[in-house]
Length: 42
Image (cartoon, rainbow, N blue to C red; front, top):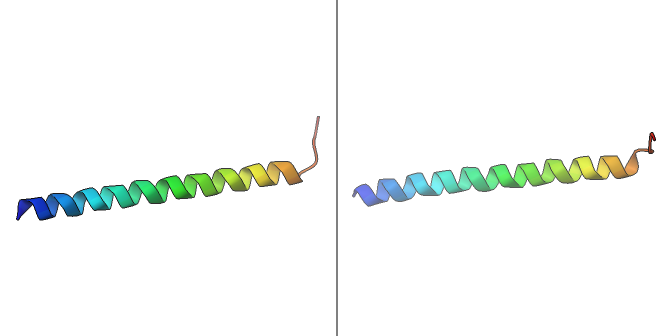
């Protein structure tokens, strides 16, 4: 039954990694959109 615990732990780590990647991509896209819409300051 130890493989069930290992599988559950792996699934939890995988879900955390996927959610972290998704939030990082969303924040990066939001920053990119904000930079495109804001006027250039150069």
